[in-house]
Length: 240
Image 1 (cartoon, rainbow, N blue to C red):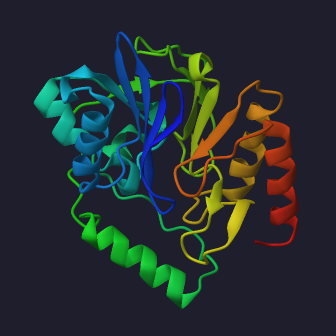
Image 2: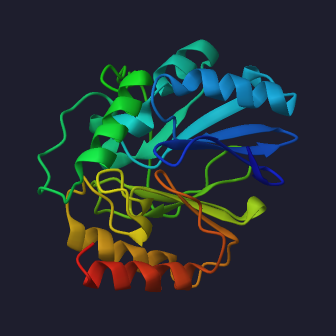
């Protein structure tokens, strides 16, 4: 689905991945779940582009529902996979620490787990090679993505700012659809390692001039970053 010229999304509000599309090639932001590989191929076909147009993958963090099919594409095409340095081990199969118990509702939680199962979410191949990145790096990929360090959800979580399409991808540093409760709107994401650090990291986005703030779960936010942060803070204060 085209969100705007040069910006495409596949998957859904439970788990999504995105494409930065240029004449010189395509950058994949996150790789969803293994079964989203077919969705990627369908999206590329609908665009009139080929899998070989992919030039690289940028992961916002190393959780399995973002690593997804990245290893498959990396091996097929020989392209680099970039990830925050502190999340490299997680993307390569290291077990993440236990996180605090999150609020949940049976219906949305079971729906998320069922969807993950249909997309191969319980057997995600770990990456065997990654390129480690840090805050401020501008990556040699279509759209010239810039890395914004945002530790909290995981130690190496990053946001990916792509000025060429006026978008920033924030991974799970926030969500607009809580996969365990079904609540919508900007709010803290579940399965977060350090919520206080995650909340503080949002200040790195303040004042960013974009048209889209795009989480890994939930609808993209088409508006001012500072309005999104305000909505997040309100939800956080209510304990959502």
